[in-house]
Image 1 (cartoon, rainbow, N blue to C red):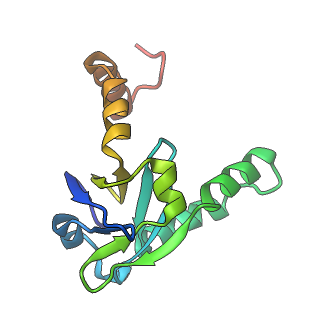
Image 2 (image 1 turned 90 degrees about the vertical axis):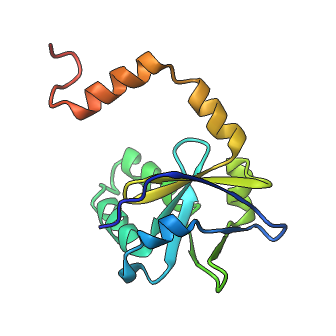
Amino acid sequence: MPSFKGEFEHSVDKKGRVAFPAKLRKSLNPGANEQFTILRGIEDCLYLYPWDEWEQVEEKLSQINSFSKQGRTVRRNFLRHAEELTLDKQNRIPIPSKLKSYAGIDGTAIFIGNGEMIEIWSPENLAEADSSLSADDYEDMFEQVMSDKTVGED
């Protein structure tokens, strides 16, 4: 299982292609065959999943109850903007124009390794997300997520 980590900034060319960071490429599982699924993130960014990791996401999505309104809505809105892509011979990925617009990516893209997937941000959206999170809020979130306690327990 890959563990993507780090932050990398690259220029986006006029055709919407951006170099895939070499350090992230080294973490790719050979089973991914340099193929990805890219889609809208929950925040104003993009999610980039290597093919092998995307298969696990699809397995989880297939278990969502499609007879519930919540289930249908989540699956629809998560999958409707998903596109498959492959690294080209220069190790670039083409970011589809609708997804670039959604994430506000223009001349620069910031790749952030996030475990099994990669987030792609515009510098402006990332700065806004970072500025809205105080050090104390992050400390509280980190403690809550990393501990075995549930919210409200002492």
